[in-house]
Image (cartoon, rainbow, N blue to C red):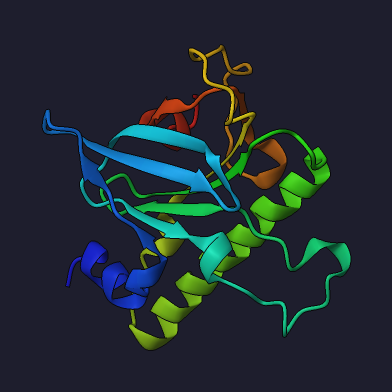
Length: 183
């Protein structure tokens, strides 16, 4: 069974955001922030095998974990691609009400969800491929503002929540901006 097939069999269909065809043979993904329908981002040129998981709406550890130190936080989406061997944790902020520390906690919480998937695959499916995926972390701020893309921060290896890629005011992105080490 392919990595994609294994992931599809693991993840509940309800939690997956469908990838769309843009009419030109490319795939796009439209993501909307929970409780803010005017806050959205379009990600273009996503891999054919992309699985976009709506973590914020579909994963809860509230009944199990205390809220101290941000352990119950998680970001909005987790994007997985076997083709690119990449996992992108993505947090969207309509405005900027939370602190950078809280945003890092959300990204860290989603890293824990990713590691949980990895443990499920290893223990129940006898598959061990997620551990080799590159992990990327990004926060999209001010996603309500409709304007042309602005320059992002200096290229950074965004492979840990503390070194996340922060983009402001961009509502259209290329998947490569999120998945590659240097955006």
